[in-house]
Each structure stands twice: as structure tokens, then as C-alpha cells.
Image: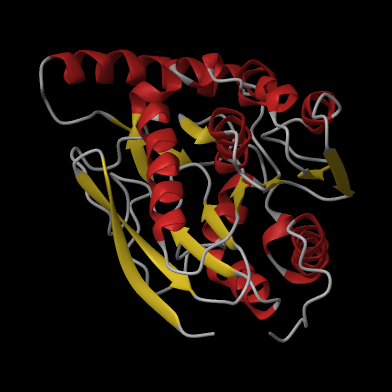
Length: 295
């Protein structure tokens, strides 16, 4: 269970990542909105690795210790390109035979789109996924949305003029100009940030204008491999009903539902339940059922 610090190229920059080597297929992992791998991905990765899988957990460009300028730029297209680069790198590793992908929240939406585009992914885990921008915008507080729109407009101008981005908070109290401002968002998100991590809790505000048009759940119908949707029934950011509708269209889709909110799945008993469900799914979907769980 030795973890290696590695990097791989993406779009002329580099993504920093962790690699655990195992004897089975590789699981590539990416996090959610503005998050970096230090915010809990290692706890999932260690469980998958203990079951025999190799694991690659990466941080998107423009965030954390990965490259990319300007900093804190949340660009959907670039993040999808980072996923493609991670898959290329993962498949180049010696001994890798089969690749699965795992994403949570915004990354949970990305992996649906990535699997549909790639066509050769062996299995997908989509945890509390952002599947539909329109559905997510419907639950946003009107005052916060209006404040965010102003910041987004200013940032669009800054981007065109080559100026530094105008930032918006990732999380905040209800009614504030934050991307995530549901009552459980700020405490839930901040609980994922280790005390020792230097973390910028802002992103370029232009993403506000992109989110409504990003609907990765629609790609579920084109995902031909097994895909597990881990759905939080009282999710205040990614409505569960919409995710379940999209999941029903996946040819080999499976759904696990939990009576919890968006951030509850990352810690405590619900993390334990979810990671056990995900490990069982990956072992089965990747054809590892005959291997020792301690391999």
C-alpha cells in the first residue's frame, strides 16, 4: 500500500497525482467542485488498493499542486481533458490491464461523460454526482444566484482583457454569492479540508455561466460498461431524483441510495457503507471476484 507521488502531462501543463500499485486493474479518481485529491480521496483509494486494485488519484490543472495558469480556473473542458490525459497515462503503466474511473460530485458528473467519450473504460463509480446543471440551478437561492451572476459578468470581461480572474467563493452561508450555499454546504465542504492543507476556497466566477449548460447525466445512455451511481437521497446540490432518472438510462447501470445529504457520504458510517459498496462493485465489474481481498 505504498503511495507514490507522480505527475502526468495535460494540455502543456502537469497534473499532480498519487499512485498506489496493485496486482489488479487501475482505478482513476478525480474529485469534485474546486476540490483537490488531499480532500479525502486517499481513504477511498486505500480501500480499493487493499482489494488488489492499482489506484491513480489526481488533481485537476489550475488547482492545488498541479500546474496551469491562471490559478483557480474551473474550466469544464479542461477538466475533461485532464481525465483523458489521466487515462492515457494510466494505460501506459506497466502491468495495467483494464481501467475503471471514480468521480465524486462534479467529478461524478465528469466520469459519466468521460466513460461515454472514451468507450473503453471497464467500470465507473459516480458518487453523489452532479448530473444536470439546470436541475442544480433550480435549487439555488435567488439572492445568491443574482450576486453570483454579477461576479460572473465581471470575470467574463476580465478573461477577455487578459486580467486576473474575478473570484467567487466555493462555499458560503445561504443567500451568499457562493457556488455551494445550501445549509449543509459550508460545514460539509470544510470538513473535507485537512488542517495542514493550504487551500484557496475560491474559483474564477465565469463558471457560473457554464454550469447550467453542463448536463453530463445525459451521457449515461451512452455508457456501455457497468456504472454504479451512489445517490444521496437528501442531496441539496445535485438533486437525487434527476440523477436517478439519468441512471435509469444507463444500459448497465446500478444504483445505491443512501438516506443522507451531499457531504455525509465522505465520512463516518456512510463513508464506510459507500466505500464497501463501491469496492464490491469494482471487484465484480472488473472480474476480480476470484482474487484474494488482501492481494
